Length: 274
Length: 292
Image (tube, rainbow over the protein chains, first blue to last red):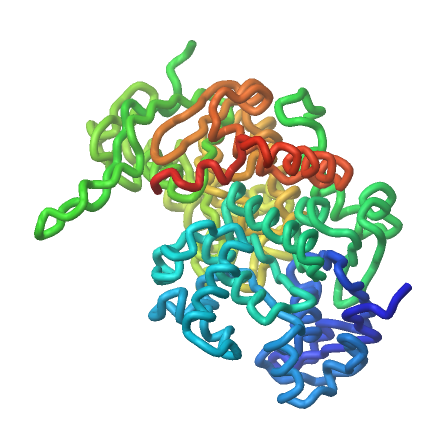
């Protein structure tokens, strides 16, 4: 196979919490190929978010007891990059990240146009910024950009906010988007719209993705490959079909059983064995 | 049919509208809602944020007053309740909320949380209190010796929700009104709590009003379902019928948005979505323009 776009090798992130060392990420290998959509699945506390953040060099604001291993993006070691280099990578053709709670990542006092413009400072004129902002909003399925650009975050619904954040993440034309629980705070129908937005970006722009989630339904919908994380370690990594059809690991099997209990695979309304 | 435990008649709840300079018309969060819950029955109320389902739950619990309409407990209107009637009602109808962390007192150990309720309703004497707490914890699948001395922050989200359910069960209610009891929990924990509710329902003949936006949960547990949209009931009926053969566009869009934990089905469906997109399908986005 080709060199992966983003890869982790033996990554360890040990955090110091209340004087104890928590091995949040403990020796993880993970690859995302160009254009591939990869799922990183686990429960709260499994270390999946810490790993996602470490790969984007956005580490949590707590004391780090140990940070080791290698994260490579296009062959460069992300963990060893200078601050200038990582900033350049985030601003242009690099990696972008979106998070769970869209409201806390938007400035409540600024209209959407100003906030998207911050990600477009490389453009020469205000007009170019406006044009590109509208384009970005259309790409995430917000069809009335002129109106949305003039609104404040509180005037948007949860799904619109998340799509505005995805639009901002797309501003630097990234090669990979790391999305940490991008739909957890959203309603079912809105969640579905955001998932479809992500899927279209993956298919039409060939944007690689690392989707961090506890929801195997979302993984089934979106991902090509899945990593299952438990207690800071990857317990299983497989093609999405192989993982759902024949999980090799007991923990993966228990997650799948829980997901099937909730996302019953039979059609709704059919008699079930309850 | 027998007299329902709890019924709502033409419930309206409006908010706002009393501004200084006229302002906007009051917003009807709940608009002419009727429902009945019978002994041992599970009724699911489905809808998205802003559909009025949580406001309705608060009204059913007697925690909010409707702007118009009445709530009846066993045929008696709650407005005519004496304080003794309220005491009976509170014992018979118990809430479970979405976020267990904020519905448990952070300064009370599990033991005091439960004993407080038992003593308040005179359901245990000093001699039987210990045994009663033990059996309550056992009924929600927790080991009494291990958990009774813990504070809420020493429990996981799923354990906290079990304690909240144990507290509700302590008064041996006939009906539990649960507002999104699973949505703040991890998926594997959701499945456990769902199983717990199913087993309590079966063994205690417990009535349950389950408020949820998750059709999978609704399908797994409920006998009847009410679908709410913008404060109104847009569809109601037996769960099997409503989810198997929905007659309302909004219900259909909720079904279309349901995730399936099977990549084969998910991929087949998304091909169908892509094919249909050209011809203007019924999809959740069609409802986007609806006023909120």
